[in-house]
Length: 90
Image (cartoon, rainbow, N blue to C red; front, side, top):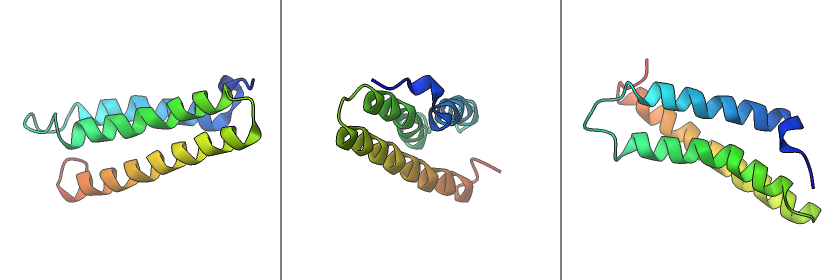
């Protein structure tokens, strides 16, 4: 089993979650069930999948969870660009 806390990707993803929560706190109050929730879920998914992948025994499973983490990161990237276009983020 791998130690996820030693991976730079995990440390950065963990910091990203905190930033996303801070940023989305400032979103309009009518937004909490929409983009706010989606962004938070996608952000939390990144380090969560890194952790789960590190708990897997096979290299193939480990890589699969890293791929899922990357896909969540790409999803979050789109959501951030949407939030910028909506004027929620400057």
